[in-house]
View 1 (cartoon, rainbow, N blue to C red):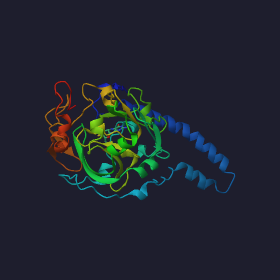
View 2 (cartoon, rainbow, N blue to C red):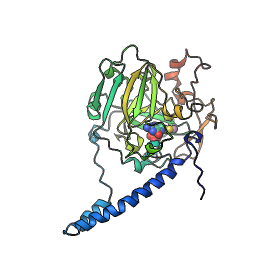
View 3 (cartoon, protein in one colour):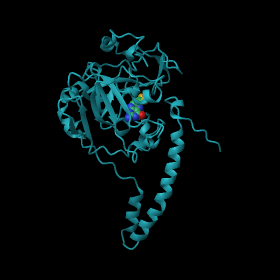
View 4 (cartoon, rainbow, N blue to C red):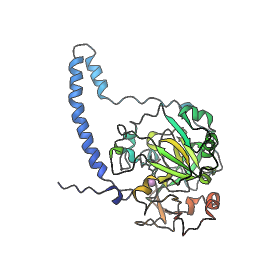
Length: 336
Ligand SMILES: Nc1nc2c(c(=O)[nH]1)N[C@H]1C(S)=C(S)[C@@H](COP(=O)(O)O)O[C@H]1N2
Ligand SMILES: [Mo]
C-alpha cells in the first residue's frame, strides 16, 4: 500500500492526515507492548485468589475521577448575551471537537479523557507586577463565575451555540496586574507528549499558542470558559480552562491553557505559524472575506441540516466593531 504523507502545512485545517497514520502505528505499538506486560501481571497474580478480578480491573479504563470543581456549577446566567438560534445539543457539542493534541479528526473526545486536569497550575507572567503560579481551584475561587450563551464559528465553516460558564478575561487581567508596557496576552496550552499523542507529531509547532491584544483581552466579550452546559467543561472542550472570543474564528479559542504571558511582542499563534497565508493573528469573522480555499459566506449549523448566512464579527459587531475602527484593513489582515 502506498501512503502519501502530506506535510502539516499542506493540509486544510479540517483534513485528516499524517497524524492518523502515525497514531494508528503508535497505538499498534502500544498494544504490542501492553500485551506481554498484562500477561506477566496475570501470571504473578494467579498465585492468589483475587487474581481474576484484579486482572479484569487492570484491563479496564480507570474510572473517571469527579472534577473537584463540579460543586461550583451551575452558575447564574448573564442574560446580556442572547442567541439567534437554538442551543446546540450537548452530545453533539461534546463529541464533535477540534483538539489537535489528541488527533486531527473531530472524533477525539475519548482520547482527550487521558488528560490529567488536577493538579493544574496556571502561570501568569511576563510583563506583570508580580509573576505568579496559581492552582486552578484557587483561581476559580477568586473569579466571578457566570454563564453566557455564545455562538461559536469555526474557520472551517461549521458553527454551534453553547452555554459556557466561566469568567470575563478582564478579571484575570486585573489579577495579573500587567505593566503599562504590556500590549498583548500570549496564551499557551499544556505540553504532554505522553498523554496527548498528537503532540508527538513533529510537523506541528507545539505547544498550541494564541494571543490577543490588551484591548481584546479586557473587552467584555472575552471570556475564559471553565464550564459547559452547567457543569465543569469536558476535557475535549478544553478543561480546565479555555478561551471564548465569539467574534473570532474558533481556532483562537485555545484549550487546556497553562500560561498567560503579558508581552509587548505580538504572539505568533499555532495556525499562523503553520500556514500564515490562511490563518492570521486577528481572525475576526467576516462572511465577505473568503478563506483562500473556501467561502466564509455561510456556515453549517451543527445538528441542523441547513446552512445559514455568516454574520460580520459572528453577529457581535455592536460589541466589538469599535475595537478595530481605527485600524487600516489594508495594513492588517483583520479577517483571517
Ligand atoms: N489547544 C488547542 N486549542 C484549540 C484547538 C486545538 O487543536 N488545540 N482547536 C481550536 C479550534 S480550530 C476550534 S474550532 C475550537 C473547537 O472547540 P470545541 O471543540 O469546544 O468546539 O477549539 C480551538 N482550540
Ligand atoms: Mo476551528
